[in-house]
Image (cartoon, rainbow over the protein chains, first blue to last red):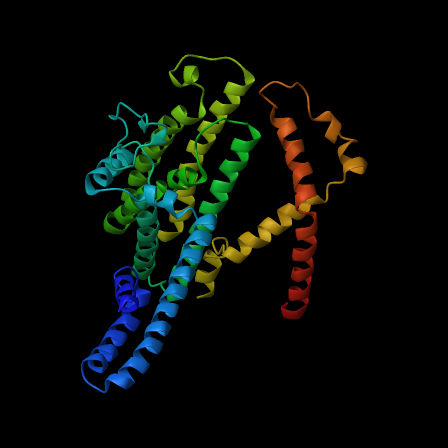
Length: 283
Length: 92
Protein backbone atom coordinates (compact mmCIF):
# COMPACT_ATOMS: atom_id res chain seq x y z
CA UNK A 1 0.00 0.00 0.00
CA UNK A 2 2.75 2.40 0.88
CA UNK A 3 4.56 1.66 -2.38
CA UNK A 4 1.50 2.42 -4.45
CA UNK A 5 0.96 5.71 -2.62
CA UNK A 6 4.52 6.82 -3.23
CA UNK A 7 4.31 6.11 -6.92
CA UNK A 8 1.03 8.01 -7.10
CA UNK A 9 2.62 10.99 -5.34
CA UNK A 10 5.38 10.91 -7.92
CA UNK A 11 2.89 11.20 -10.74
CA UNK A 12 2.04 14.79 -9.76
CA UNK A 13 5.54 16.02 -10.55
CA UNK A 14 6.65 14.95 -13.99
CA UNK A 15 5.18 13.59 -17.12
CA UNK A 16 7.25 10.45 -16.84
CA UNK A 17 4.98 9.04 -14.21
CA UNK A 18 1.60 9.86 -15.60
CA UNK A 19 1.27 6.86 -17.92
CA UNK A 20 2.53 4.18 -15.59
CA UNK A 21 0.54 5.31 -12.57
CA UNK A 22 -2.66 5.66 -14.60
CA UNK A 23 -2.40 2.15 -16.04
CA UNK A 24 -1.09 0.84 -12.74
CA UNK A 25 -4.00 2.35 -10.90
CA UNK A 26 -6.39 1.00 -13.50
CA UNK A 27 -4.96 -2.50 -13.28
CA UNK A 28 -4.36 -2.64 -9.56
CA UNK A 29 -7.83 -1.32 -8.72
CA UNK A 30 -10.02 -4.05 -10.12
CA UNK A 31 -7.50 -6.68 -9.14
CA UNK A 32 -7.48 -5.57 -5.53
CA UNK A 33 -11.24 -5.10 -5.43
CA UNK A 34 -12.40 -8.27 -7.20
CA UNK A 35 -10.53 -11.42 -8.09
CA UNK A 36 -9.10 -14.11 -5.84
CA UNK A 37 -7.20 -12.78 -2.82
CA UNK A 38 -4.40 -15.29 -3.40
CA UNK A 39 -3.78 -14.19 -6.97
CA UNK A 40 -4.03 -10.52 -6.13
CA UNK A 41 -1.59 -10.93 -3.27
CA UNK A 42 0.91 -12.58 -5.61
CA UNK A 43 0.40 -10.15 -8.51
CA UNK A 44 0.30 -6.94 -6.50
CA UNK A 45 3.71 -7.10 -4.82
CA UNK A 46 5.39 -7.80 -8.16
CA UNK A 47 3.71 -4.94 -9.97
CA UNK A 48 4.22 -2.68 -6.97
CA UNK A 49 7.87 -3.57 -6.85
CA UNK A 50 8.26 -2.99 -10.57
CA UNK A 51 6.46 0.33 -10.39
CA UNK A 52 8.49 1.52 -7.43
CA UNK A 53 11.76 0.47 -9.05
CA UNK A 54 10.80 2.10 -12.30
CA UNK A 55 9.78 5.33 -10.63
CA UNK A 56 12.96 5.50 -8.59
CA UNK A 57 15.04 4.88 -11.72
CA UNK A 58 13.14 7.59 -13.54
CA UNK A 59 13.60 10.11 -10.76
CA UNK A 60 17.31 9.29 -10.59
CA UNK A 61 17.63 9.76 -14.32
CA UNK A 62 15.80 13.04 -14.14
CA UNK A 63 18.08 14.33 -11.39
CA UNK A 64 21.13 13.35 -13.38
CA UNK A 65 19.88 15.06 -16.52
CA UNK A 66 19.02 18.20 -14.57
CA UNK A 67 22.40 18.30 -12.89
CA UNK A 68 24.39 17.76 -16.08
CA UNK A 69 22.27 20.10 -18.15
CA UNK A 70 22.71 22.78 -15.55
CA UNK A 71 26.44 22.41 -15.87
CA UNK A 72 26.48 23.08 -19.61
CA UNK A 73 23.64 25.51 -20.01
CA UNK A 74 23.06 27.61 -16.91
CA UNK A 75 19.31 27.23 -16.87
CA UNK A 76 18.76 29.10 -13.62
CA UNK A 77 20.66 32.08 -15.01
CA UNK A 78 18.67 31.90 -18.23
CA UNK A 79 15.43 31.99 -16.26
CA UNK A 80 16.44 35.38 -14.88
CA UNK A 81 16.62 36.80 -18.37
CA UNK A 82 13.13 35.69 -19.25
CA UNK A 83 11.48 37.07 -16.12
CA UNK A 84 9.68 39.85 -17.96
CA UNK A 85 6.18 41.18 -18.09
CA UNK A 86 4.16 43.22 -20.54
CA UNK A 87 4.92 46.59 -18.95
CA UNK A 88 8.66 45.96 -19.12
CA UNK A 89 8.50 44.85 -22.75
CA UNK A 90 6.46 47.88 -23.71
CA UNK A 91 8.80 50.31 -21.95
CA UNK A 92 11.89 48.62 -23.31
CA UNK A 93 10.63 48.70 -26.88
CA UNK A 94 9.86 52.38 -26.41
CA UNK A 95 13.39 53.04 -25.17
CA UNK A 96 14.87 51.08 -28.05
CA UNK A 97 13.08 53.22 -30.60
CA UNK A 98 13.24 56.53 -28.71
CA UNK A 99 16.03 56.57 -26.15
CA UNK A 100 16.38 60.33 -26.00
CA UNK A 101 13.99 61.00 -23.15
CA UNK A 102 15.14 58.24 -20.85
CA UNK A 103 17.04 59.71 -17.94
CA UNK A 104 18.29 57.06 -15.58
CA UNK A 105 20.22 54.28 -17.26
CA UNK A 106 21.62 52.51 -14.24
CA UNK A 107 20.75 48.96 -13.42
CA UNK A 108 19.52 48.63 -9.88
CA UNK A 109 20.91 45.89 -7.73
CA UNK A 110 19.47 44.02 -4.83
CA UNK A 111 22.21 42.80 -2.49
CA UNK A 112 24.73 42.38 -5.29
CA UNK A 113 22.32 40.50 -7.54
CA UNK A 114 20.93 42.44 -10.46
CA UNK A 115 17.21 42.90 -10.17
CA UNK A 116 15.04 40.86 -12.52
CA UNK A 117 14.00 42.68 -15.70
CA UNK A 118 10.45 42.77 -14.47
CA UNK A 119 11.38 45.34 -11.84
CA UNK A 120 14.01 47.37 -13.66
CA UNK A 121 13.63 48.66 -17.17
CA UNK A 122 17.38 49.00 -17.65
CA UNK A 123 18.18 45.35 -17.05
CA UNK A 124 18.95 43.32 -20.17
CA UNK A 125 16.62 40.48 -21.03
CA UNK A 126 16.58 37.71 -23.59
CA UNK A 127 12.88 37.76 -24.37
CA UNK A 128 12.95 40.73 -26.76
CA UNK A 129 16.04 39.50 -28.66
CA UNK A 130 14.61 36.01 -29.08
CA UNK A 131 11.23 37.24 -30.23
CA UNK A 132 12.93 39.83 -32.42
CA UNK A 133 15.09 37.21 -34.08
CA UNK A 134 12.15 34.95 -34.85
CA UNK A 135 10.04 37.87 -36.07
CA UNK A 136 12.93 39.03 -38.24
CA UNK A 137 13.07 35.65 -39.95
CA UNK A 138 9.32 35.67 -40.52
CA UNK A 139 9.36 39.23 -41.83
CA UNK A 140 12.27 38.32 -44.12
CA UNK A 141 10.20 35.44 -45.48
CA UNK A 142 7.31 37.83 -45.99
CA UNK A 143 9.52 40.33 -47.81
CA UNK A 144 10.94 37.64 -50.04
CA UNK A 145 7.46 36.37 -50.73
CA UNK A 146 6.22 39.74 -51.92
CA UNK A 147 9.05 39.76 -54.43
CA UNK A 148 8.39 36.19 -55.57
CA UNK A 149 11.77 35.10 -54.36
CA UNK A 150 10.54 32.90 -51.58
CA UNK A 151 11.29 29.25 -51.04
CA UNK A 152 11.26 27.41 -47.71
CA UNK A 153 15.00 26.80 -47.70
CA UNK A 154 15.60 30.52 -47.82
CA UNK A 155 14.05 30.85 -44.37
CA UNK A 156 16.65 28.46 -43.05
CA UNK A 157 19.41 30.32 -44.88
CA UNK A 158 18.27 33.63 -43.41
CA UNK A 159 18.04 32.17 -39.94
CA UNK A 160 21.47 30.61 -40.00
CA UNK A 161 23.10 33.68 -41.54
CA UNK A 162 21.65 35.99 -38.91
CA UNK A 163 22.60 33.55 -36.17
CA UNK A 164 26.16 33.28 -37.45
CA UNK A 165 26.55 37.05 -37.60
CA UNK A 166 25.19 37.30 -34.08
CA UNK A 167 27.63 34.70 -32.77
CA UNK A 168 30.54 36.36 -34.55
CA UNK A 169 29.60 39.74 -33.15
CA UNK A 170 29.38 38.40 -29.60
CA UNK A 171 32.72 36.61 -30.01
CA UNK A 172 34.35 39.76 -31.37
CA UNK A 173 33.05 41.81 -28.45
CA UNK A 174 34.23 39.16 -25.98
CA UNK A 175 37.67 39.12 -27.59
CA UNK A 176 38.02 42.88 -27.44
CA UNK A 177 36.81 42.95 -23.84
CA UNK A 178 39.50 40.41 -23.00
CA UNK A 179 42.22 42.31 -24.83
CA UNK A 180 41.47 45.63 -23.18
CA UNK A 181 41.08 43.99 -19.73
CA UNK A 182 37.92 45.72 -18.81
CA UNK A 183 36.75 44.77 -15.36
CA UNK A 184 33.08 44.59 -15.96
CA UNK A 185 30.21 42.49 -14.80
CA UNK A 186 28.88 42.04 -18.30
CA UNK A 187 28.28 38.35 -18.86
CA UNK A 188 28.18 36.62 -22.23
CA UNK A 189 24.41 36.43 -22.04
CA UNK A 190 24.26 40.20 -21.44
CA UNK A 191 26.26 40.75 -24.61
CA UNK A 192 23.96 38.38 -26.45
CA UNK A 193 20.99 40.39 -25.23
CA UNK A 194 22.52 43.71 -26.29
CA UNK A 195 23.40 42.38 -29.69
CA UNK A 196 19.89 41.05 -30.10
CA UNK A 197 18.23 44.40 -29.48
CA UNK A 198 19.00 45.58 -32.99
CA UNK A 199 16.49 43.14 -34.45
CA UNK A 200 13.71 45.44 -33.28
CA UNK A 201 15.00 48.27 -35.47
CA UNK A 202 15.56 45.91 -38.38
CA UNK A 203 12.00 44.63 -38.22
CA UNK A 204 10.61 48.17 -38.12
CA UNK A 205 12.72 49.15 -41.13
CA UNK A 206 11.73 46.16 -43.22
CA UNK A 207 8.04 46.50 -42.37
CA UNK A 208 8.09 50.19 -43.23
CA UNK A 209 9.82 49.34 -46.49
CA UNK A 210 7.23 46.72 -47.32
CA UNK A 211 4.32 49.01 -46.56
CA UNK A 212 5.49 52.32 -47.92
CA UNK A 213 8.39 51.69 -50.30
CA UNK A 214 12.10 52.18 -50.36
CA UNK A 215 12.16 55.74 -49.05
CA UNK A 216 10.27 54.72 -45.94
CA UNK A 217 12.71 51.86 -45.44
CA UNK A 218 15.71 54.15 -45.54
CA UNK A 219 14.12 56.76 -43.28
CA UNK A 220 12.94 54.33 -40.63
CA UNK A 221 16.24 52.43 -40.77
CA UNK A 222 18.10 55.71 -40.27
CA UNK A 223 15.93 56.56 -37.29
CA UNK A 224 16.34 53.10 -35.74
CA UNK A 225 20.09 53.09 -36.37
CA UNK A 226 20.49 56.40 -34.57
CA UNK A 227 18.28 55.17 -31.75
CA UNK A 228 20.24 51.94 -31.30
CA UNK A 229 23.51 53.87 -31.45
CA UNK A 230 22.43 56.19 -28.63
CA UNK A 231 20.94 53.30 -26.66
CA UNK A 232 24.11 51.22 -26.83
CA UNK A 233 26.37 54.13 -25.96
CA UNK A 234 24.31 55.11 -22.96
CA UNK A 235 23.99 51.55 -21.73
CA UNK A 236 27.59 50.51 -22.28
CA UNK A 237 28.98 53.74 -20.91
CA UNK A 238 27.93 52.77 -17.43
CA UNK A 239 29.20 49.24 -17.73
CA UNK A 240 32.50 49.59 -19.54
CA UNK A 241 33.94 52.94 -18.62
CA UNK A 242 35.28 53.83 -15.26
CA UNK A 243 33.03 55.76 -12.95
CA UNK A 244 34.61 59.14 -13.58
CA UNK A 245 34.48 58.82 -17.33
CA UNK A 246 30.93 57.59 -17.23
CA UNK A 247 29.83 60.77 -15.57
CA UNK A 248 31.12 62.78 -18.47
CA UNK A 249 34.36 64.16 -17.12
CA UNK A 250 37.30 63.96 -19.47
CA UNK A 251 39.61 61.36 -18.03
CA UNK A 252 43.02 61.08 -19.61
CA UNK A 253 44.94 57.89 -20.02
CA UNK A 254 45.40 55.36 -22.77
CA UNK A 255 43.24 52.81 -21.00
CA UNK A 256 40.22 55.05 -20.77
CA UNK A 257 40.69 56.08 -24.35
CA UNK A 258 40.72 52.44 -25.43
CA UNK A 259 37.56 51.81 -23.47
CA UNK A 260 35.88 54.77 -25.10
CA UNK A 261 36.91 53.51 -28.55
CA UNK A 262 35.57 50.08 -27.68
CA UNK A 263 32.21 51.49 -26.63
CA UNK A 264 31.99 53.59 -29.77
CA UNK A 265 32.89 50.71 -32.05
CA UNK A 266 30.40 48.34 -30.47
CA UNK A 267 27.70 50.97 -30.84
CA UNK A 268 28.77 51.78 -34.41
CA UNK A 269 28.74 48.11 -35.42
CA UNK A 270 25.03 47.88 -34.71
CA UNK A 271 23.83 50.16 -37.57
CA UNK A 272 26.26 48.45 -39.93
CA UNK A 273 24.77 45.06 -39.10
CA UNK A 274 21.27 46.43 -39.29
CA UNK A 275 21.84 47.63 -42.82
CA UNK A 276 23.83 44.57 -43.87
CA UNK A 277 21.16 42.15 -42.78
CA UNK A 278 18.19 43.95 -44.31
CA UNK A 279 19.22 45.69 -47.50
CA UNK A 280 18.79 42.60 -49.64
CA UNK A 281 15.19 42.25 -48.50
CA UNK A 282 14.02 45.55 -49.98
CA UNK A 283 14.45 45.89 -53.68
CA UNK B 1 16.75 31.41 -59.68
CA UNK B 2 20.45 31.56 -60.41
CA UNK B 3 20.36 35.30 -59.95
CA UNK B 4 18.54 34.90 -56.65
CA UNK B 5 21.00 32.35 -55.42
CA UNK B 6 23.96 34.60 -56.22
CA UNK B 7 22.34 37.44 -54.34
CA UNK B 8 22.47 35.19 -51.34
CA UNK B 9 25.95 33.94 -52.02
CA UNK B 10 27.47 36.50 -49.74
CA UNK B 11 24.73 35.93 -47.21
CA UNK B 12 24.66 32.16 -47.04
CA UNK B 13 26.54 31.81 -43.82
CA UNK B 14 25.71 28.50 -42.34
CA UNK B 15 26.82 27.15 -39.02
CA UNK B 16 29.22 24.93 -40.95
CA UNK B 17 30.90 28.07 -42.24
CA UNK B 18 31.27 29.27 -38.68
CA UNK B 19 32.93 26.02 -37.65
CA UNK B 20 35.25 26.23 -40.65
CA UNK B 21 36.16 29.80 -39.79
CA UNK B 22 36.86 28.86 -36.19
CA UNK B 23 39.07 25.95 -37.18
CA UNK B 24 41.02 28.04 -39.68
CA UNK B 25 41.53 30.91 -37.24
CA UNK B 26 42.66 28.60 -34.46
CA UNK B 27 45.05 26.88 -36.84
CA UNK B 28 46.45 30.22 -37.89
CA UNK B 29 47.14 31.21 -34.28
CA UNK B 30 48.58 27.84 -33.35
CA UNK B 31 51.00 27.86 -36.27
CA UNK B 32 52.89 30.95 -35.10
CA UNK B 33 56.19 29.53 -34.03
CA UNK B 34 57.74 30.80 -30.85
CA UNK B 35 61.43 31.05 -31.62
CA UNK B 36 61.41 31.28 -35.38
CA UNK B 37 58.88 34.02 -35.69
CA UNK B 38 57.47 35.59 -32.60
CA UNK B 39 60.77 36.36 -30.91
CA UNK B 40 62.10 37.89 -34.11
CA UNK B 41 59.32 40.45 -34.23
CA UNK B 42 59.42 41.21 -30.56
CA UNK B 43 56.38 39.19 -29.60
CA UNK B 44 58.15 36.51 -27.64
CA UNK B 45 56.91 35.19 -24.35
CA UNK B 46 59.51 37.01 -22.32
CA UNK B 47 58.80 40.31 -24.02
CA UNK B 48 55.18 40.47 -23.06
CA UNK B 49 55.03 40.81 -19.32
CA UNK B 50 55.94 44.38 -18.55
CA UNK B 51 54.95 45.99 -15.31
CA UNK B 52 53.11 44.14 -12.62
CA UNK B 53 50.40 46.70 -12.22
CA UNK B 54 46.75 45.99 -12.61
CA UNK B 55 46.92 46.83 -16.29
CA UNK B 56 48.64 44.26 -18.49
CA UNK B 57 48.11 46.24 -21.69
CA UNK B 58 46.86 45.10 -25.06
CA UNK B 59 50.16 43.64 -26.31
CA UNK B 60 50.64 41.48 -23.23
CA UNK B 61 47.09 40.20 -23.54
CA UNK B 62 47.59 39.29 -27.19
CA UNK B 63 50.83 37.45 -26.45
CA UNK B 64 49.12 35.66 -23.59
CA UNK B 65 46.30 34.67 -25.86
CA UNK B 66 48.63 33.32 -28.54
CA UNK B 67 50.60 31.33 -26.02
CA UNK B 68 47.53 29.86 -24.38
CA UNK B 69 45.90 28.95 -27.69
CA UNK B 70 49.10 27.21 -28.69
CA UNK B 71 49.26 25.28 -25.44
CA UNK B 72 45.63 24.38 -24.99
CA UNK B 73 44.52 23.72 -28.54
CA UNK B 74 47.54 21.76 -29.79
CA UNK B 75 46.12 18.27 -29.27
CA UNK B 76 42.47 19.03 -30.08
CA UNK B 77 43.59 20.74 -33.28
CA UNK B 78 45.47 17.62 -34.34
CA UNK B 79 42.33 15.58 -33.88
CA UNK B 80 40.01 18.08 -35.54
CA UNK B 81 42.33 18.66 -38.48
CA UNK B 82 42.73 14.93 -39.10
CA UNK B 83 38.97 14.51 -38.99
CA UNK B 84 38.55 17.40 -41.45
CA UNK B 85 41.11 15.94 -43.83
CA UNK B 86 39.48 12.53 -43.77
CA UNK B 87 36.00 13.99 -44.25
CA UNK B 88 37.08 16.22 -47.10
CA UNK B 89 38.85 13.34 -48.82
CA UNK B 90 35.83 11.12 -48.51
CA UNK B 91 33.06 13.60 -49.24
CA UNK B 92 34.67 16.41 -51.14
